[in-house]
Image (cartoon, rainbow, N blue to C red; front, side, top):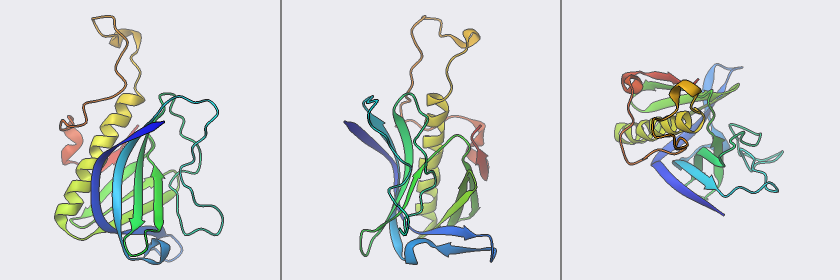
Length: 184
């Protein structure tokens, strides 16, 4: 059993970096996609596995992470791109702590997880801003999920720390004005 919480949903062309040519190429043959940033909460089940992408060999799907999430809390954060014309999933990304996210210009943003680079060419600056807000909210939640309290950080009430945030509130932190972000 699982539930999903959407952080952002926009229209964009999903891109990947081709280091041999030094350029960005559309994934899955191109075309406009519905791109969603979302959180998946699953009930603990030791017999289940989850991969970062459902594409196998020969698939046009390009997962950002091909290994199961290391999250002990059964919470994962994803970016999913589904091409509008034929509903083909061209991107299924499990966000990780080592995400590097860059806003290159008002309608093109890209990120790197491990050695894989992906980008989005948005239909409008408003879509880019909405996606940026969604990514940053997800990153704040990743930080909370993966940042256990140390002894010096134990809450005064003695209760166990909360593993989730109130995602309807604006994220706090000075990184909101930064053009690139590294989650460490």
